[in-house]
Image (cartoon, rainbow, N blue to C red; front, side, top):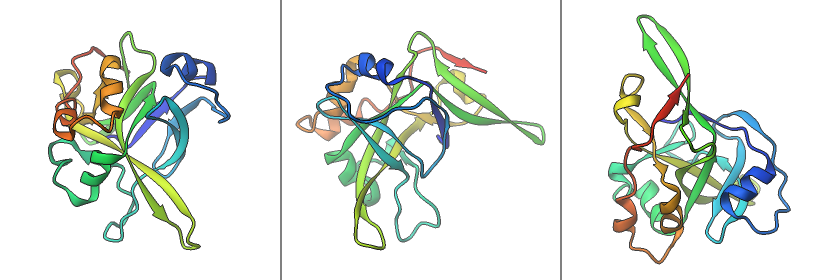
Length: 191
């Protein structure tokens, strides 16, 4: 699960990290991003956009913020988006709550030697009550790696920088892309 994350990066840092073109969009460092917030994403062609976090489906009581990697190709809510509308979700950390006895301790988790990392995301377009189209995103999660397992059994898919272009490429077979949806082998920095 990934229910909150951070993007404490400047516009210039994002520009350098993702080799972005001209950027009209304003970017502000965000120590904590919540579901339904609008936040920066990277689209094919290294384009930076802002979209809202959470798919809004008629059957769901609240926005669907995560999609499971194991069923991404089968679940009707997510499969079309995974096949046709993938994005990178830049982050500097994500948060998870570790249960210790009766208490839950909020943990901030970053990736060693990767100050800005990319979580695998998918996009979907909706219409609001007025008929205006807007785009939302969900973060793909996978089984926790060994470090993360002591805190939670799930974690966001953290893509290797060299796999980001493949992940975004719509011409690559989605079954091949789905092989990238695995727990990271990188060291996590857990606070």
